[in-house]
Image 1 (tube, rainbow, N blue to C red):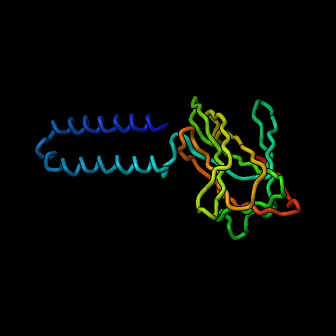
Image 2 (cartoon, one colour):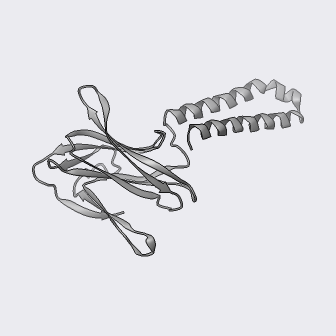
Image 3 (cartoon, rainbow, N blue to C red):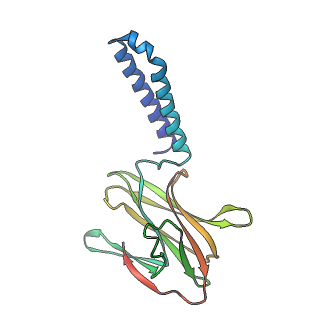
Length: 212
């Protein structure tokens, strides 16, 4: 994981491919020579496509993968037996429209002045793999048509749990508008993100408890 590791692995892949081509050249150099341009073009094309996808964030920073992410009014960790606990989250009873079962549109969250919100995420990592992730909170500025950073919260994760390593961040004094929270690596690669809209109200919405 990381740009250095990606470039090193890409160089090793190219080297192994060249060794493979060199190996098959002994079996039939004349036939290989006829298609050498197509083979080289294919190798370069694949390398360029993967590199562009990696550095633009189209593909996630493997071996990390986002299993779950969501925004809630509050999150409380409850210790369990055997060192395995659960997270109790408070969510609005009707925050998702009935027709949007796949949650393709941003969720609308209602907050009273001075309230806070929390984002919960579960990130999968391989066994014996330890690193850190960042929750980056951003608010969309309608005047400049750009995302403005509101907060960043970092915490460590370790691999081995099937459901992913769980963690959360909390931000208070939220203003109305569109938000996104990105789950990122320490060097800024996006593992995944969630979008939601904040509306300010005077009466606390009806909440329900869920377990994660």
